Image (cartoon, rainbow, N blue to C red; front, side, top):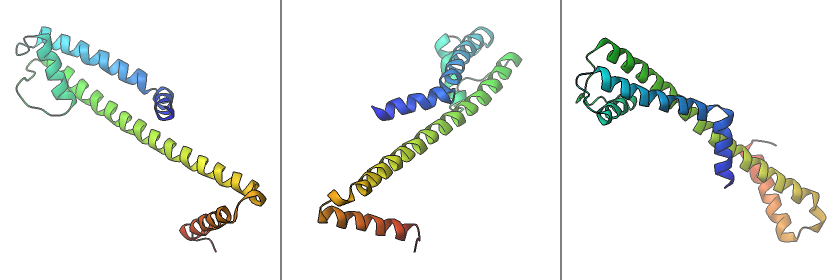
Length: 143
């Protein structure tokens, strides 16, 4: 549950929700305009299919834009799609970096808690803590 909440917060903080919503609206309007203006796009479903093919940069070629307005809308949709994909990728990368930081903070808190209660630790816990410190020192090249 923490992960989903964190992802939602990151999506809101980065503005991805608004970006994706506006992209989706533009996508659907473009499909409608292409349906009205392009002779090769006979149904709204064909318009959505064409927009999907453009957005995914697949380019099957089963439907092509032949009018000037259709080609302009295709260019705008293609550029917009690439930008939204890049923003989505950055948002997911941000999410994973936050997850890594969250885990590191939790580990550090647990480590500090053990250090604060050093006299209360059993010999086994002390040995495990000593091994963690040795591993940390060797992995960070601390002498």
